[in-house]
View 1 (cartoon, rainbow, N blue to C red):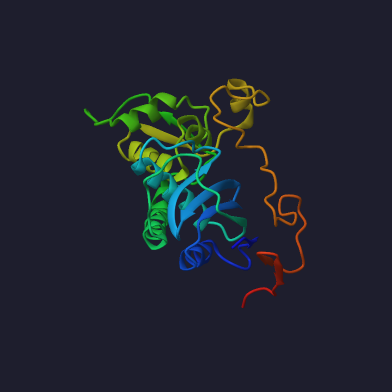
View 2: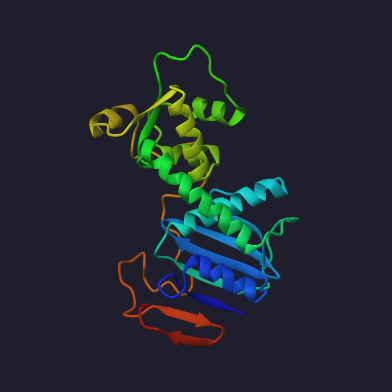
Length: 250
């Protein structure tokens, strides 16, 4: 069953639940909130996910984490476009097979925790920096926390740090909040543009970028100009070779 449309017609969670009920196997392409990615299904179960920042997973545990992270990203979005291509498998061997209900439950839990993170990190554009003097006498650093501290230079935004380290929005936010709570890192919510420009050439690409995440992704089939500023008068949902035109929900 091929399927394409927009979140105006079918929300992200409803879309996954529909594919599960129909026991579909294939690749779901979604673009929403500046994020584009693929989610793979086999007989209605979720087997993996990939996007510009997520490459081949090294284990089933990593595959599950990335799947939950991408679902978390898409659950936040009210607008988006999608296309489901049947019988397209993941480009890697995977042993993961999770129910839609389980993955969505974990993704929704992240949304709840994300509100607490946003109270400390209000935007992905803020620039964290390591404090000049550590107040606690001792702190415990995990490997992930240490990697993040090593990457913080006062110039990189939270978004850029996530891309540099290959972490998702939720994961880098969670780690940063823990460092702020421990008094190791502080957040510069606003910095003068002149000060930022003096530290880094804003016109030059960073060597640490893992992909071209700032550039617009090519429109997914069924995307009637969301990126270009125009959109159809009514949302569209295409199933197989038939095109259904529906009015706005409600």
